[in-house]
Length: 209
Image (cartoon, rainbow, N blue to C red; front, side, top):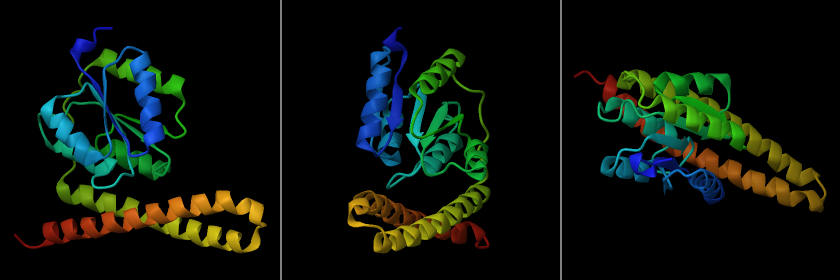
């Protein structure tokens, strides 16, 4: 493969998953650049256009939904294929929203590497996508809010369930439950921050011009 033709951008805040994907694609002969969140990813894209963006959805600062929306509203990046990889947004409604805003493929974690590589090779063979028209800003933020509110409700229920388990399970089971609880609390707090920003955007777009 001629790696001078472009690069693959991995946007992932989990260092283990980021390293796994980076190593896997590099071993296959691809030029790979990584970013820790959507904001870093956008900065890299503005410097050099990638062939494909491979991104997690839940990330700090700018998440995957926000990243793909920004790519689609810019005519210069509207045709870049985007592969979502996620362990959190896995419902049918999540997938439909992801595809509706312009994601090209949707992969659940843990990543099946054979399937992942097949998708990457397929997208590289296809080249740039036909130009994808972005959602209108208000429609994007309304759909985004619904996905976040549904996910927040799930996280709150998960936290309550795991806090109950911690109080009833024997000590030897507590480490795994506690780790899961900490992750759920982190994700709940991230979702709350995102919702706060989305509500601000909705208020701005709904005000009479």
